[in-house]
Length: 139
Figure (cartoon, rainbow, N blue to C red):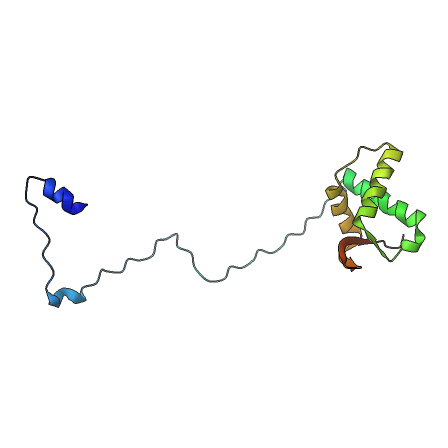
């Protein structure tokens, strides 16, 4: 493309002359790295800060529902204490409890998050199927 542009110009442009062989060892000077360059040394983690509240925060609605669901299972099914109950069973029980109590139903993800804080949550395999189970603690 440059050759075509050179041919179209009216003025003859002199081509650059090659450097003599003695100048082959010439190198560009090394520039210092920019000031914002990252240092590849490992960074230190910040220490965790322990926050202590003087006044207790009220529990969230999802936490209240999760604790009520857990208390219901512990009360009505004492044979399940110490065992893992599958997520679909707990979810169905939660829906029934909300209808019976007249609660505004929360999304299961919020209830499951609170249940996993209260109980031991584990992925369990049974008869070739994987499911999430929640271990029911003693009351």
